[in-house]
Amino acid sequence: MLFWGIILLSAAISVAICAGAGGFGSLAWLWMLPAGFVGSYLVLALAAFLFLVAACRVVDLEKPQEADSRAYRKITRVYVRFLVKFARVRVHTQGLEQLPSQGRFLLVCNHLNDVDPVLLLDVFADSQLAFVSKQENRDMFVVGKLMHKLQCQMLNRDDDRQALLVIRKCAEILKEDKASIAVFPEGYCSTDGLLHHFRSGVFKIAQKAKVPIVVCTVRNTKAVIPNLRHLRPTDVHLHLVGVLPVSAMEGQTTVAISQQVHRMMAEDLGPGLTGEE
Image (tube, rainbow, N blue to C red; front, side):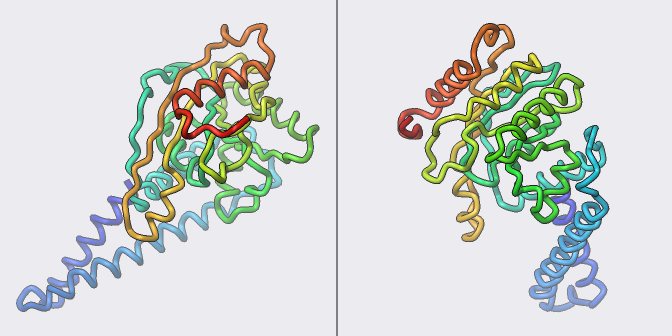
């Protein structure tokens, strides 16, 4: 909506500028229209960016976020859609009909690039995803404050006690129907593009909250930034591989659940995209 809004408004402004300057009475429109469009686009894009910065400036990271912010959820949705369109990412989805129509869930996915959360927020825009993310992301410009308002939980990977508190908090968010939780069980971006070993502790979230696990895979997100630099579109594939119901987790250890989910992802990705365990 924001992307096309800026495009259409920029086009309208460039036509108005050209008409007002009498450009249509000569060949001047050949340079006035594109120049007016580019100038208008840059001004409007800057205005949209400044609005986002202003909205995030009032966010207090020290104040606990006890509920999902409807306003910041809408803002995030609009800007995420803009980023996907601006980067010319063409998302091909498969299996989304399996997504639970009611109730919360734990979404797990392989992790190839920093754009993965943006892609998931776009595809699952109606699911109110709150991510478990590394603590360093809390200090990211604009992003950290948006994550705070969306109830994302920051994890210190070197502090097991704090990690346990995050797991409990995520289970609480699910139980109280505040948001669905999204995690990357590998714990980091895959540097070689392969699926690697999971940190099984994140699956305690689903066990404690008694919610299903939605298993997804993504492909080719590593190509987004290089292609953007060369003004090329990128085809990204997101598969909802399956949903692990609560009944399937009863009596299972987190390690066993982790291994089952890993197998589901590995079978979908194929041997060429699965690392050695």
